[in-house]
Amino acid sequence: MDAEIRNAQGEKLDYCFHAAAGESPFTVIIGHGVTANKDRPFVVALANGLAMAGVPALRFSFSGNGDSEGRFEDCCITKEVEDLGAVIDAVHGQGRRIAYIGHSMGGAVGVKRAVIDERIEVLVSLAGMVHTKKFAAVEFGEETPGEGCMWGKEDCPLSQSFVDDMNSIDTVLNLGSEVKVPWLLVHGTADDVVPIEESRAIYELANEPRELVEIHNCDHVFDPETDADSLPLMVQSVSAWLMPKTMPNIVFPNSSAASEG
Image 1 (spheres, rainbow, N blue to C red):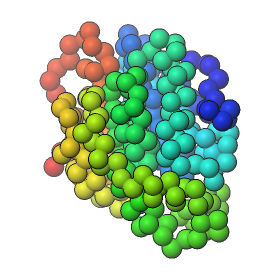
Image 2 (image 1 turned 180 degrees about the vertical axis):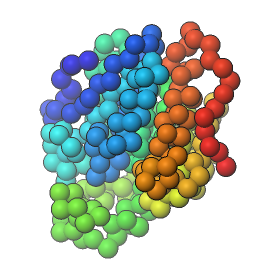
Image 3 (image 1 turned 90 degrees about the vertical axis):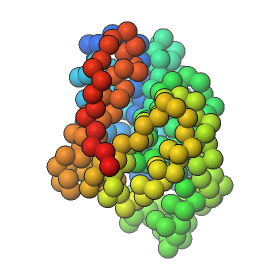
């Protein structure tokens, strides 16, 4: 895929497409978390793993992040929901069915988009953010919008519009029961950025088919330096769950690579 993708503001979104030799009618779109971009190591590893398993993947940077156009100060969940819609427009416009994987804040984006966009047929949340207002308060509450930065990153200034958007949304917990598609939630038990309890709570409200995979000792970004098994387990778990749903004409053995508990 080499089409140019622009959001509603006309900003070009940077992406990388991982072609696959399989016959899946789906393309998996992968969205990142706050202050991140499409080139996070675990995002690249996941896209490569899916492509090797036979399902093409497209990882992209939300506007204002990475090499995508736009100002970081304008980044917020509401805008990123629109960005995701622009990516879906481009992929679906080429006759592809859509699965979406979102990490952290990208997980909240996925929930909000999935309840309004029936083109998302499969949803995966990786350490998905649920309580947005609480997240902003806990992580950035000591910073002054317009003056401070997120996690000390000078290229990631904390804007009032970001804080206002997080506060306005408050939580996506109430949307859990409105997601009508197969939904996988993957979360590490050692996540100190988005507590695993958030995935557990929204999972309880989710419709079937649903699955919650808890990876023991895993942090927020599935860092193999923290836990050597976390990254391969995440990739294997997502791939094993997605394959039967994105290759509907292929019969798969009933097995799981997940580490649960």
